[in-house]
Amino acid sequence: MTPDSRFPIPDSPLPIPDSLDQQAQQLYETGQYKKAIPLLEQIISNYSDSGDIIGEINALVNLGLVYQRLGDWAQAKQTISQSFTQLSQLPLTKESQQLQAQILSVQGQVYLSLGQGEKALSTWQQTSAIYQDIGDLTRLTESQIYQVQALRILGLYNQATKTLTQITETIQDQPDSALKSTALQYLGDVLRRVGKFQDSQEILQQSLAIAENLPNQTLIAENLLSLGNTARLKGDTEDAIYFYQRVVKESPLADIKIQGQLNQLSVLIATKEWSRARGLLPAIDYSLTTLSPNQRAINARIKLAKILLKSENTQLKTPKALANYLADAIQLARDLGDKRAEAEAIGNLGTLYEYNQRVDEAQDLTEKALVIAQEIQAPDLAYQWQWQLGRILNLKQDKTNAIAAYAQSVQTLQSIRSDLVAISSDIQFGFRESVEPVYRELV
Image (cartoon, rainbow, N blue to C red; front, side, top):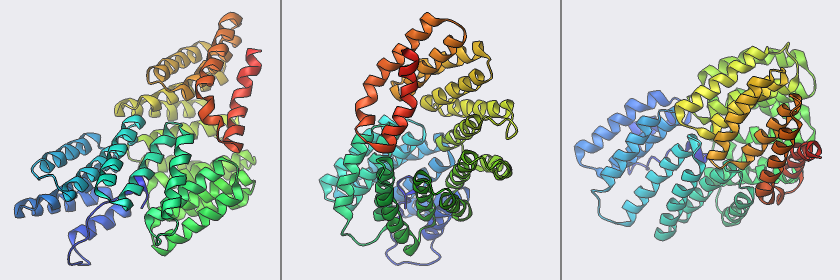
């Protein structure tokens, strides 16, 4: 299973095919989260009635994970809190430490879903320390994979690469497992980022083979998505579309499925296949309605708006439709308290207004996005909005302040350049592609 979909139900001492535990796990793995809730509540009640605190905590952890996937943060946090309360009744043993680590693991996933990458990273570092202490090397590896997720979201690619290299060296000779497939998939993604497309493709095919043999439908879909991304960067657009179509067809999870749809749309627009692109949009709009209210739902709306805006083809979607996607993303980000996503959505709404020459609204939105980005110390967002502010001020013939904004953007870039540029090729290329105009406009 992937790190953000782990369902740590303990194995039953006497495996029964139709046990409540196994039914709940099957519902979770197929994305039927709401149906899993009453089963898990029954399991918790059964363990509570029998005085089995350990079993009750395990079931509470799983229920917390279900609420996390549904985007019900209040219930997820309450369930995690309840888990810690029950844990406090147990003496300090290896088993209770393992339970503590499992609770922290889910807590980290909640933080990550809320866009709180630093809290997620800190929580998973605690988890790793516990597994290191009790000598559980498999779970230690798993918690390190969680950390890679947080590092990537925080934009700390150097640290993510170092951690991932250590992980893959550790598990290379281990038997096939979901954990091994996940680690290989992440490695394939990093290899793509550094421009080693052939190596990336080979590693991802290896990961996919493991996922298919298990079989694990979620992992299969995620590997297909990664293979599509690698094929696209290699320039194999038809292969990319093939992989993305398989994601849409085979993914049991709506938030992975929509990634396949959005990436397919992006390829079709890049190759100016307008008719095929237009045909995808109703399905994408429907998919948006099926997403749980979490960070991925916000990101999907932002990504869709950016893809369509970049196309400069108003026959696909009107500017008003794009504004609605971003307004929905802003509201959802505020509901979740996800400041980073809010800054990104507001800034992109500013981009839309800039594109439509509504410079006063564009400036107001961009300045708001910049303030939030600076408050949460997100320089990778801040430089974009400083640069955008410079462009807008330039459109308003305010040359002095435009130059000042460009200069601030360049200064912000210096603070993040070392970590981004240390990885070469497509990250470096993407960095240059977005940064060079900043320097040109400053000059």
